[in-house]
Image (cartoon, rainbow, N blue to C red; front, side):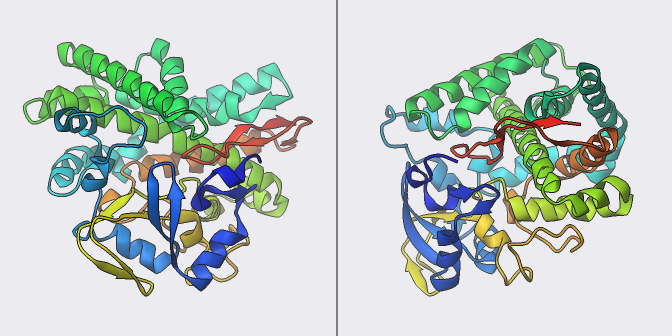
Length: 397
């Protein structure tokens, strides 16, 4: 891992683990003001406080923060900012957020996900077949962890196959904190332009995929900017999180062979194991950043109105108040609860899809290659990305 000192504290890791300094803040202070690329923020570290912040959209606004202009970026008009955040649920407060989420929620229910299960299993098996034919060694990230969720979300939304490599490259640049902010912003604008074009094509000829459904059933309620924002958020969130969980989670299981055997051999152990991996790895460093709408008190600290608040999810998920011996991975715990998918109105809309993909992919991979093991070569962590994970994971079998 490189350059942890250049990262804000909530993003610093040593392999799978948050740095000890983050736990020290949780145990000794609960809240600390830290510096980030977007200026100073109040970092919340305790599980109960994180749930309280994420669950209170009235006192902690997402929309106010979304209107803040990043340092060093060109000035945008309010109209330009409003267009950029249209349809992005992570940049909205109720009631605007509630209206859009109600339109999307039916497509992400557990019953809807069960209908997708056969196709998701096909996609997983196709990539395992390709790995098997090519033979070892393989890069698990490039050959399995990244393409499987990418293909699932692209098919769900209706992104043409020829466009998938481009969106992955743009997304990676958007989320890479090591790049200059202007380059990340440019990637975001390119992604937005692509989504606007995809929406225009879909409005002209709506198909059966999610974007086509939104055009057919809600075309009078959703404008082009909102549709582009919805599609962009789902596309990024739908592959970045799950792909990094598959890569990082596989390495975690390889380093805990007794727990790997449970996931491979016991179907009843898979669901709880996925929840424990989500808790222990906490690949999303923070929940949606908030702005206080009035003076608030958290962990004895008074935070004035208009201040930025950030929830350190890895600290919360490893809080002894949540689970005993929280630094230890134990897939036998059962689903004890976590904030890996956030909490409150911004709880991850795609959580049922992500869970299903992981519950299918982990055991399928481990059963297909029972001798799976790290290969020679460096397993590199993605230290500077908004979503933590692996850059590469060489494996053999």
